Length: 398
Ligand SMILES: Cc1ncc(COP(=O)(O)O)c(C=O)c1O
Image (cartoon, rainbow, N blue to C red; front, side, top):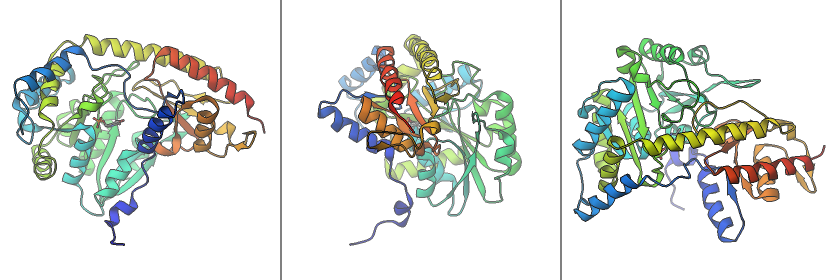
């Protein structure tokens, strides 16, 4: 067989994507699955945003756009940075791409050489290490796990900085732990980057979903830190726009220009219709966003209360995003009928087979003692899921 690219063979199988495909076929087969694995809002995209896209189509706005995105959108992004994050950018400092995912990949391609090290605090979103491997750099994991849950500190990061460190990927609010980092911690980490001359790729896609503690954008902390920060954001989570594929970056001009060059030869530009929709989202009313945030918060409080009442389960209260990490290690070694639970994958499969509730095994996030529950589902479904899960856990014996 003709061989494939060596770096592709280094990449792990994408379990989240596999689960998504499996979920479709289980649903097609008539299984009444409640999916608590997906990382997307269950709300519809707000009406005024859809309307802007319809108008774009009707007006024939269906052609190529400038690689970096239309000026109107980049201007709206600058206004958002100025008004909401207290950071000054000009449209020349911005690029829009096909989702935050493409932004992240372009940023890594733009800055990393083979052998460069990219720091990734763990638990982490599963795409980061695989992207780093794909471009030929080396992921260096900063384990933040402590007995009660994950705690990120600047000291833990410091221990992994070498002369090969090119960047750190920081996600705030955090998927999967739901952590929201305070200004002091961001300052300490940003200063490490300034002193060590490496970039902070600050993934802020869950920015609006901070229920406890205030969200601060990394680039707003100081001008020295801003000079080292590539801010990554997108509209998927904030505006319930996962399928529209809207992501953007702001950062040092040299990096943005390199990302533009990469994009010009790969995908050209983000979908023209979505660009018009994104302008409407960023400059229109945020009422629907506020509504979603309030709903997520209600669900968060509900799910924490239910999980904390379950025997053998332990979890920290998440402060942001829409995930909760649940430590299920107390069930390893237990079984029901012929199903033995040895790890978080077995745990997820047991819950799926016994209750039709799908949650993500922690291995996806480098947190093997955990499962991740996404509470971007209706309160009714969350209640049913928690009832079923509680019952299934009681069946497990040593
Ligand atoms: C931490 C994090 N960053 C980025 C993304 C990608 O978002 P997008 O839909 O904009 O590509 C996700 C999606 O799950 C995410 O969890």
